[in-house]
Length: 247
Ligand code: PGA
Image (tube, rainbow, N blue to C red; front, side, top):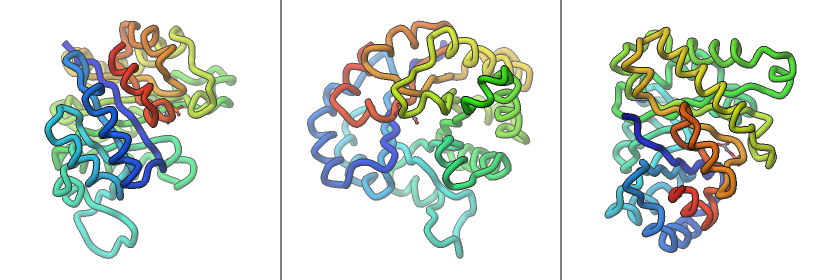
């Protein structure tokens, strides 16, 4: 059966010394037998996180990487560089990368393929804008994002991925999707994966919800049949993250 995943996306928050301070104070409380716990600090804070969490089961991930092996790509880091630093997972296709940094479906697909090939666990994000939700086209839109991201991936490789459904209108707004809304789209993500790769891959894939998840709403969200955990932004920067891990 699929395992629950609780993942903290710190975004551009916490310097290396803030990372040390925070993780020293919560590290014993963010370990869980029931869940796989991930933290995704900013790149520069990753070595601190890896060193503090080395004797725990908490997995350290990166928020981004570039799919090329090496070379003239100023400002970028490769999968091998991350792996050599102790990184085991990577977020791909977050709406902030898509919208602020112009990442398109083609780039996201290349990153997804490379991450899996290198042995990094990808957390692939999808999510609709408020405009798309209001137009009633959310399901088709998310299905399109998933199909484009997984193009060319084998069933075996798809089985190594985690998907996070994060409606853009719920990210950082304090406006969480209702558990019915989140369950509906997480279920349709699983259905798309089933159409692409069959029942075994779809039933084993962890599908997360993200968007203003916190200690108050996490239990209800993760109790839904198709929601296997959360990708948590602002609440993962605080002590509250330890409470979410325990839900
Ligand atoms: P939020 O962010 O929890 O602050 O809404 C979630 C995310 O963007 O991953």
